[in-house]
Figure 1 (spheres, rainbow, N blue to C red):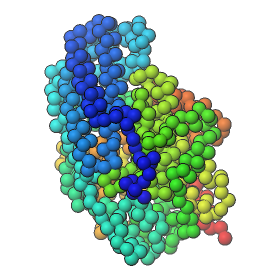
Figure 2 (cartoon, one colour):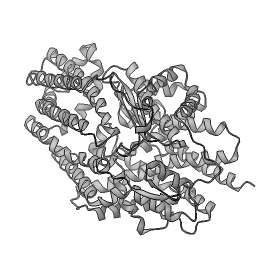
Figure 3 (cartoon, rainbow, N blue to C red):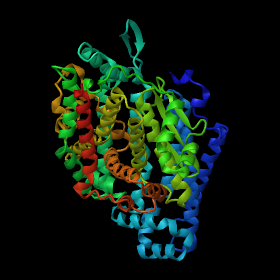
Figure 4 (cartoon, rainbow, N blue to C red):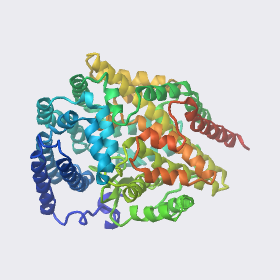
Length: 597
């Protein structure tokens, strides 16, 4: 179903945030006024009273800004709607002005000194929630520039950041419908159609069809490969300039420092995944063997092992399954789940110019919202469970922690969401005795876990190598990035696939929007699914407290400390073993089911 044809209850309605665009603009004006008030504290932060007033203004501004930004997500349902692009431009203008006006803050706080600032915080209970943030600030203080330099960087931040916005225009606003003759009818190629063909087409006879639909789905990226490469190179060049100005050893180190994650943890993740890549190969070779394919391409890897299983799920059916699966977490969890599913808080169905994928966002007084692209498949069920995990995490953190400690960092975000995936799979497979359904569920779960762990680590290694080359002043082009992406894929098990130059698969790396919007983000998926599997194991053993404690912690400690409280230490290779072992056991079970007579 297309979004435009869906009932209004399946669509976002943000009138509870702002009754009109004029109301939105009034809050934008308030942000501007608060920025002007903040600017008056320049040179005056060296007293406790002014420091307290400044933090009060800062909190007020942050809460209003979050509300403004959430409202702008309405633009994601139609990237051609210029209204929200215009509003985003207005917000960008104001926020840049505020950043310029307050660029002196970090240098001034640095000059006041850690002892004085933390002394004030310890003296005033109302400032206590800010302690962790300032402790971490002073850890990074060496990278704070002079007031003049910080103001200069703030003044050029918008123009330097515009290149990232070009990605959305190229990938979504300029996206053109592609058509395909399928079952003797000309149809529009959508994500739902692509998935149907990848999963349900004839394994042998339709290999070309799968390659064709993949090409059509990626045509916009392939046709504009040079533009995407230029955009990405520009983003990496800007990052390289930034780390040199602030004297970071690398973009990776700069990206990780905000979460106090050592570079060694990142590199350990890449090492563990490469070292244990055989289970990924075993699974894909199992698919090849099951269908007796002489040639085996990446476009064949999603083929369903059981053809008689064609179950689809309505939104309501999915909600029933998820609620029952998560009932083990208790009434407090289910209460927050109901809030996350409130009317008009989830935009379910896909459309031509709607942003692809799914996400949850909100918090700080704004009930979380979810964007989906519903296709009636099991993947939509697990995606809704996943995004609901984010929303419930936000609700727990908001209710338990005081600003800004309610704001949990992204590195913790994917834990709650993937715990939900584990529980939904467990519920589904234990509620069926049908062999075909078990095969389907096992295959889907293996694929999802490997995509979250191995595939995301592969992406993480690609951007690590790409940024490293730019930092070494090695020019990057569409061809060099395509070659690098292919080399990384081969390091992560893609040598089990046959090469097909006609597919242009090496040019589809720009589909990974995180490369453009959130550098060094994707590794967090792999880190977090490892952590969530440990929490899932706790739940299966009757301990739900560790998960609820994690959810309520928000951002009250450094991320690795929050995880250590849950018994997770990523410096130890043994931390990864339960997840990897579980994937291997699932592959073995799948193999046994396929060989049963």
